[in-house]
Image (cartoon, rainbow, N blue to C red; front, side, top):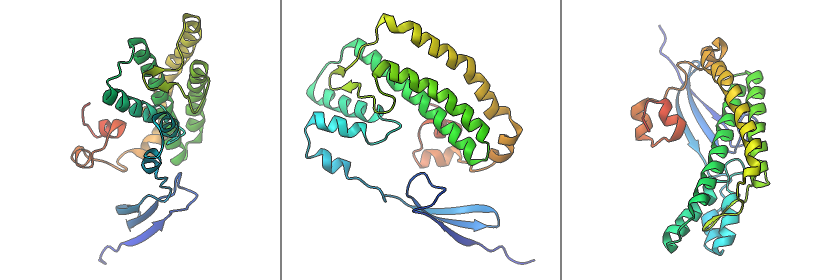
Length: 227
């Protein structure tokens, strides 16, 4: 019997399958990926250096543009740092509004990547189902902040917009739509045989490796690490 042979498959940094410029070198054994070396930093923007030459308000706008999809978490982290340093107390109502907007961002981000995952395994029907639901979340974000993408609602010391009682009916309608449709989408991902065949026992990250690599969020929880 011949010995198993491996070969190296380079992909990137510019490749139609990649969402961002990243250079991969995969070590392949048959159809199995047994190792990977990656190089990042091809679109490094020196945001920390730029921030050193701006005032806090300018940095806030800069932080909002680190990522077009998740642009609440970065300005929120920056504002909290400034508030802690300057001993600024944020009103309780503003804290609640920050949490609501951040949760809406988290929901739409997770749905987006669920759709992307479906697309990558060749299940575009689920991609469109996911993104149709995400559109409703984005509509609600736009209704509350005035913007679908760069929300511009977080500021040092609080928020720029209030949530009023007049908005409650629209919010409840959007949340009811989400609750009615999310379980169906969840069932597709967990129960559909096509998805199971293409995802089970593939790309396993053990609990030990997740802790060693300092993985976070859904990735860590999927590896069995409790919150």
